[in-house]
Image (cartoon, rainbow, N blue to C red; front, side, top):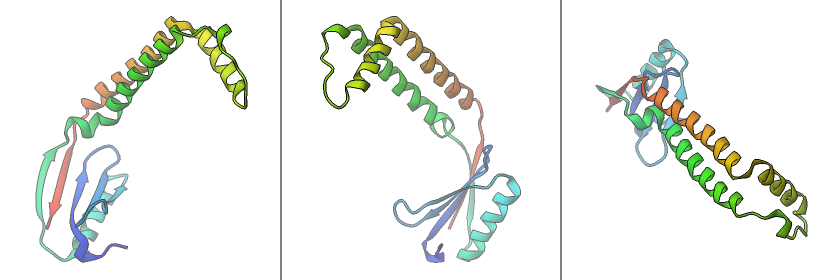
Length: 153
């Protein structure tokens, strides 16, 4: 339920999902909606304007790099870190020296056999391919610029 005294403004993203964020006064009370098309987004913005009854100022800005491709950047950094950690882990493993006992012995056996199959070079190759793919997605999405229209009370 949206209460009119709690509305601070509306941000309308002109991205491929036409994301609309209804900003609330207070922390972490914002509501995000994927409108799907510009007409639906405009209807949402107009309904919020009517609900609050105040006069809005409109400001247009370009979306920043992190808004456009932040998820892919973070995932590529995490992939590179995990690849490096797995490389150092796999390069130091000697499966015949490890005792596999207890409840998780089957999982350990599978993990050690996978590490033995891939080896250090396979780990680097697979992790590097995933990291390069994520970096390519970050680069591709950074080229797609869009505008954000902020309506504030």
